[in-house]
Amino acid sequence: MDNVVYLDYKAKELDNLKSGKKTMIIRGAMGRKLPYGKVNEGDILFFIENKGDGLVKAKATVSEVFNSEQLTKEDSLKLIESNQPKLLLDNGLMKRFGGKRYLVLISIKDFCEIENFKIDKSKYGNMDDWLPVGNIDNVAIR
Image 1 (cartoon, rainbow, N blue to C red):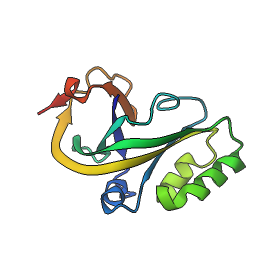
Image 2: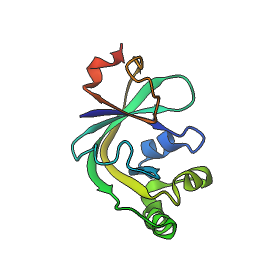
Image 3: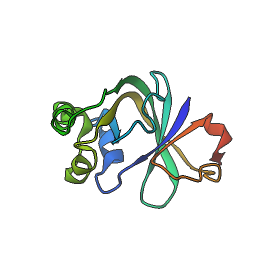
Image 4: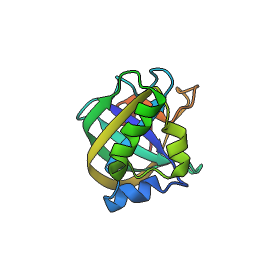
């Protein structure tokens, strides 16, 4: 399964992935929403920054996925802090995900930059920061 994943531009998530310092992506919510339970080892993640250019710039393979059970605010913060060396969250992202009841931690491998392309988002009315696209060729505009 291919997924398009939006990264926080201000937090320099893409730069941290490029440098190899960041090796884990996080998503979290008060309920079980995407990608909870929907991303698996071996899936391919295609990365776009949330700065408006709409360009997919890199990809990586999912090496491991952790879907939390329902967490207390304290347990949520502890889980994030224990993975912070791999997540490299800035204060803004720490506030965004800290305290969420459900967290998904996604370890990646084989990160590489790719030739930039845009995607057709017309099938995704509810724009989220995680789009399960099935096959990237179905949405790629090259």
